Amino acid sequence: MSDDMTADPKGYWKATIRLTLTLLLIWFLVSYGAGILFREFLDQFKIGGAPLGFWFSQNGAIYVFVILIFVYCRQMTRLEKKYGIKG
Image (cartoon, rainbow, N blue to C red; front, side, top):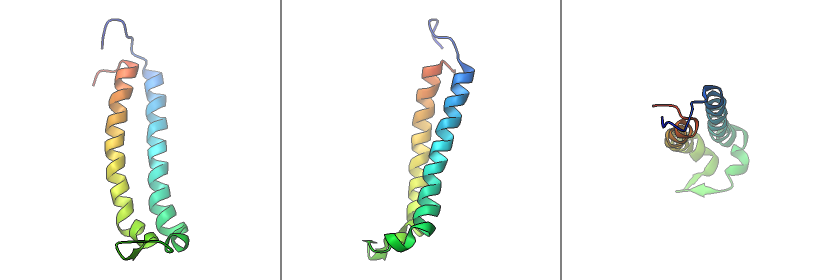
């Protein structure tokens, strides 16, 4: 933490919760929404010969989850710098 920056734990915690809930919502929409709720609509389209709804339920949710892990790591690093939290 630099001398001109003071830590803001409450702001950091609020931003961390907001980020976590946002990423969980995205994952829920992809895994449950695309794989179950919107499957019939998405099955009109195909990826690699498989219906898109099936693809999301089998593969897409996992790929999105891995991407969200990297997004979370990058965003948390930015939040730590923004709020002056030592990591």
